[in-house]
Length: 439
Image (cartoon, rainbow, N blue to C red; front, top):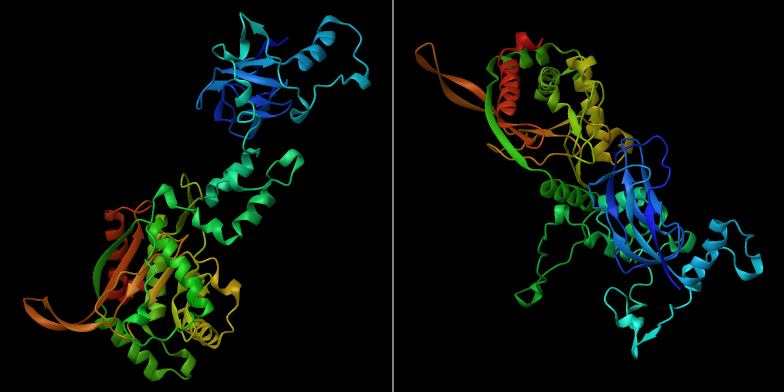
């Protein structure tokens, strides 16, 4: 004989009005003792509420987003004959059933099929609200068991937990199981940012149109391609353009290089760009920040590590100069030269390419009048620098030739708005135009 019992929220410590973030069962599901029913999340922790009995869930009275406390009703469960018999002596004060007869509620796989009493010649299972015996297999157990931290990891990686085989107790999925599954080739195909379906590139047999050659991409190119693709599809890019009058700066730079005692003391445009960017990051700290993985908080950095894109025979690398705010123009120039040589020689270390706050991509030595650089996540902005050129500028009621440097600032529109980007780049241009303000 089956009995119905109310399922209440047990003692969860000092927590009150805790939010329900997940419901793991539905009416008609068969559960065993300790199977998770719902997940609660407070400001400090997540916790699963297990089933106190084995049986069939008849009703769930809470919904996702509801708030519960100790004693709140979760739902009702129909306790089957064996479980009810084990429960009765404990409630009536009788002696416990000897261990040989199975005093503890049996595990889910040991539960007997519920009897189907006959009434008026028809099985009771045909009555409304009761599962038919043929449906028992379909509602026997949940597809998977996993804790809140495991579910959160799976959501971040875009992995369907129903496809992961658990190695924990009674098939429970662990963090290690999710990590192992994420390394499999097919796992990456499941991850689609915000559910967006991205059509794949069609396979084309180019050889039928003419002669071809297959050339394998270099390792650095493959890594860069993955990162650039991820950054492009996950960050809402906007690019703001401006120009800086660097006539006086270029004159100062050339005079300095003419009197430099050593080649390593000579200056390019890059150290000045670094100084201008650091000043901008200090004045507009939003640019010296990163979004947290959940996209809900802004992490403001108190240090100033600037990356520089370096074109190498093996692909693009971005070594980082640390504490750029504490270094002189000559110090920056020397460190840039050293990192460039190491990058092109393949000896730059991994840690020398980490921790950047902002990146500068300078194509002035090659050419171009403008381009839209892709942000190097988790940074929120990048500065593109094409080649400077002489242009007529109207000054003092006449046109005079001035050396103008075009600049392109790509920024993450989730963090930076257009007005802030315009102010940031205007500040950078002002410093590059009047070198006295920079020095």
